[in-house]
Image (cartoon, rainbow, N blue to C red; front, top):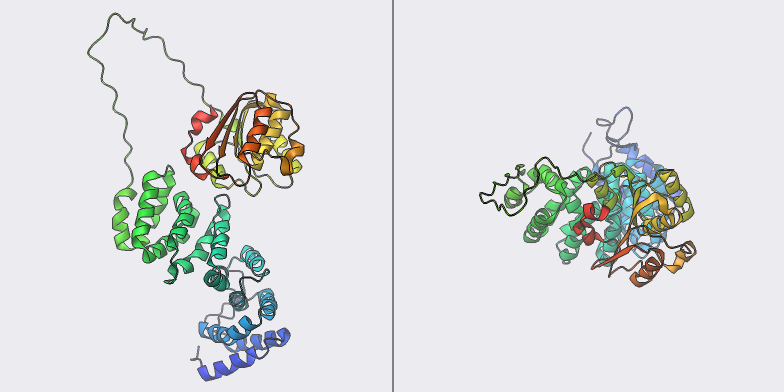
Length: 457
């Protein structure tokens, strides 16, 4: 492609910006300008960007940069018009127009109530990696700089333990903030990302690499401390596996710090106990032919996990249960409470002997089902169950049952009041073990420390 005449490009971009308040004219002149700078040497027959479903003009980056420079001041001074123009650019559906739409969102004040819904909806629609990154970085520019607390609240939503599908978005959104030398609240970032790094899903290898490298550049010592702490305390075997896979892309000093912790561990068989030379003949000897009966193996196919209202079968708890107890049932539930109960009853069917684990709203589901059909349930385990008068009091007018029930509830639960839930539980379950732990509603820390084999038996 011939070299770009920068003087002409500036004139074209300036003229295009003159139509900022006339969307139809703006789009007409934008198409003409993009066609003028089409890179035919790279353009494919299908005219679609690689790894994308978007048409593209293969426009040189300098062209879009010049257009953005001309639109910046107008967009910041007229956010209402900028938002309308962004909608039109997005609907045009080309790679270049969607990148411009993402840029305009980044010039809109973070207080604009329509900003986040646009970003949320568009990130769910798009699969083009370049546009997705632009939405999570460029479109959040002002929020990241002007209202960092609001931005971090958004990132926490993305990185919620029970929303693993949005973790990649949260990581990509965080990277520019970490890389910003003016940002000083790195401890908050480490607190947010540590559970995600510990979970270390293999599907996020590239995102985790970018995150860890950016953190290391911003604060080497804190990053080393976090990774060592995770590797020495986690019970998730995949953490070391994933970090070992991506470690070749780490800076050499970081690789050296983690080398010993990332080495594959050799499996060793326990050495058999040596026989005791001293035999006390006064003690009756056991008949060697008598064998201690083996403990009955748990039927994992009769264990079911009921997730909370905003969760699904891919949540952190559900996946950990499925990994720890292969064959365990971890279904998705959707709709209102009555619809979820219908789905649960369909799954249970006529089978008996179920162990039900319910979290939050799933705890309410487990409670209602157990009180209605106690003969179907072997044991009930509830995690911060939504046993509260508002808005679920109408479902809790139930008869007490003697099904063995274990409840784990956090003292810092800000969703389900502990005292209220406990009062309901003590009325409904005559065989109740109520465990109070120092944790929040999601029971993140307690969940990792509990002996689930013992609880389920």
